[in-house]
Length: 285
Image 1: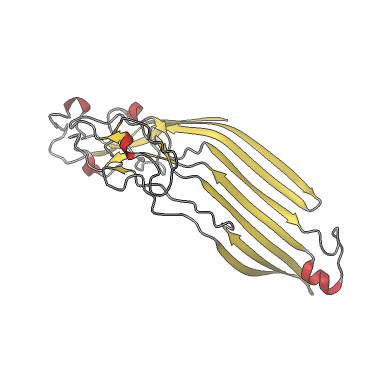
Image 2: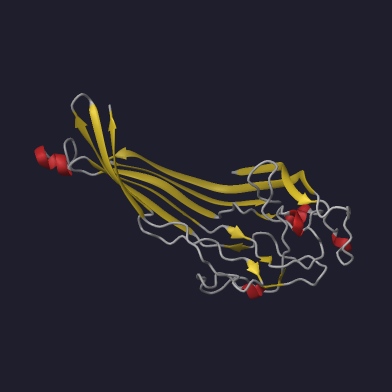
């Protein structure tokens, strides 16, 4: 699968000091602190191999599994038309901002399954009376997803480029120079990546790092549900169910601190999910 986007928004400060004049700090419109503008000269592309497996209902089991191996690249990721993009450094060079999108997930596995337990009236192991009411007719279903981590951009905690774009609040960030590998042998919450791989550029220059060059933690989630429907008089159905969200209580951690020079760069202090269990009932007639 291939998809291309063109004429995408690239919000930036057109009063930023041009790269050729960073040492002098001369703004095009010195009477203003910043001039926010939305240009539609961005672009994106998405390439993917997508696979799907489906099992139709037989012997009480049905499932659907989807897998995607993909890559998304763009000149800036935004929430929609005429909004800020994730990060940019040079307002006059959108091509330099072209890199991995913040939406990029290299590998993604999702799916759902339902299994009618083989106990009860009309099933493989038939039951009658009270045994059927208690044990028979239960359904076990689940929804799962697993995907690689999302990319992020290490940025400098202070700006000495003299670009004077920091006051626009429109996505500007001063990027570091890359001097080594950001990978660590055993990524964990105290050091997810190597901050020493990045260093502050010389004053009056831009950094050479590419957007979204480092990836955060992967994601794993399994939601399970156990349910049974009772048939009551007057064509009334009563369903009871127990739902367990993030049933394995897998720790899906947030992105690490990406501010180089902050003292806590590379550390993770948040998690996104935890197990939640709920009981419920529903009447339909």
